[in-house]
Image 1 (tube, rainbow, N blue to C red):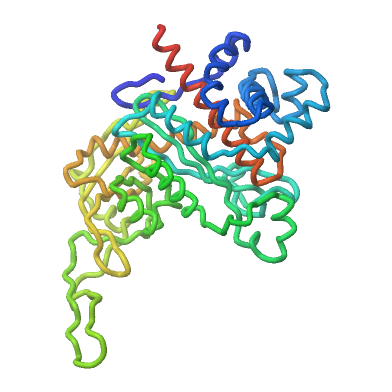
Image 2 (image 1 turned 30 degrees about the vertical axis):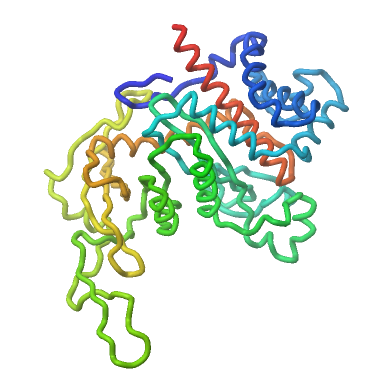
Length: 420
């Protein structure tokens, strides 16, 4: 990974994959050996190594199971069925493998100032037989379509980036009686309950924090996560700093208003909930604040080095009070980022400490994009969207192996740089 002034550069892994596959087999075997005991049965260990090799094979147009087998083993229907069973029905557990994966990410990329990135990635699907499939907004297509929706956590530091965890979003309708047969056919466990995408995201964050093996300080995400005050407060309660994009109608107070506990009337329970003092101002929308900023409130900064040169934007940052249940909450940063070409302004909230420097906030504003690059790498080179399994367990198995494949490339790239 190329690093310039603490800015991660986009890395093209295609050159690594264009090498003779046999040259990658020794490091791949060594890498797979880290996880092999967690697959349990000998057949599962063998199939997992084969599947990683298939995902990493450079000259395959589609990396679903049949093309993998044909490419690496020849026409072998028994092998196809065996690998299909391994991915779609295998009783090996994803959680222990992912937890070990976090340990390995710590070794390769871990930093105290690490960033946990949240994002969704969707997978268009034909038919209605795959777990959680529904007509819903599909980010990959940019419109409503039949698809499966995934929620992902990634990790970025000055050393590089990779994926950490994933969860398949199961729409609420799937938990109705009408979907009982589909849930059984898709092998959705009985203890799986409906969770919003943000609840899935928090479950991943909480799990990574609880495991305690991977250092990170920041959590980033787009508006879908930033508009959820529950999620932001959960992150803050664990001592992490969020840096979240928020919608333009997000409300804040520029100056903390005065509140009071209403006097007791002498009847019933004594009031405990504060309210705004009469005459205190209402909160402001963040886009209204952008409108009255003077020119000297803005400063121009380089966010990162792009393929066509440095990417710059104008920034302004202020300490404000967030809004919770119509009342002033905690003091946070409001960060505004203005596109120098179009003038478009994006808004972010962060609970980073008051002494945090603007240059740090600028840097973190550019630390959400690497997860999108992970998705591009995964879908274009590692078959992340090529799976043809329909089960809940199959989706999770496939994503686990894709994450391991991506991290293998990260390790390989870092090792390559060391030897230069």
